[in-house]
Length: 280
Image 1: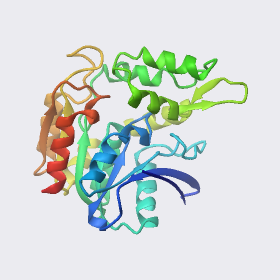
Image 2: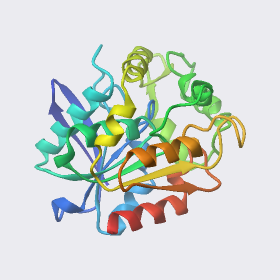
Image 3: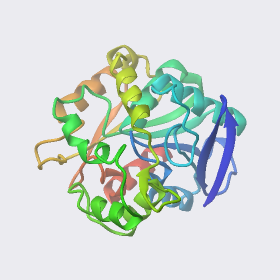
Image 4: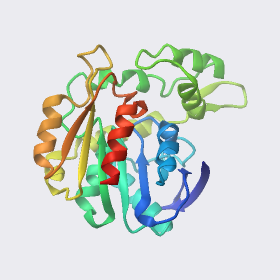
């Protein structure tokens, strides 16, 4: 694993890589969800590298250790950043795997810049979002803007999150997200205002106008379980996955059993499906 920074579009963008850069066509861009970071891919990136892929996982602007400008959030801004990152690394074409918001960024990228994309994997997003979706992602939004008395207090609260089992992966994920201030207090690195702007901008986008424009071979993966209960808090429903599949020519859907919106990318079934798709 290597951690690097690049100056693009007036900001500093942090990114992690796994594997050796051998051929441009073996490069995969890993794009995280709404309030996440590159750490979302800390298990999946090394697996890609072990199969000869070169994986690049940026912290999107406003997340992780990337810069946090006061404004400029939403799919078009992220696509601009990602294309500028690819330009800086001399990558004319990349494969793209995006989870949640990352999937939305992926279909915008694919629809508007088709020549820059090899294969596309949409992870648990791509359809119309159900009404209980904001409630479903409430656990991750809840920490934004909160001040915690210590790192231990922050991690203790995160351990109570019902959507995943606490283990070293999630502890490292949240430690990376924690900004420890000089007085010992802790906040999330993600500014609440950035996410509020992000949500408003992206709600104004018309996915139904973008999806039919995608030309790249596309794999749509969806989590079988909800985050509020096995049947509630499902971000990409079976019906919406099928509708997205019908709109993206030649795409296919794979349901990942025993996973929810937050654990899907940790599943061996997910890993096997994506590796097989990339190798086709």
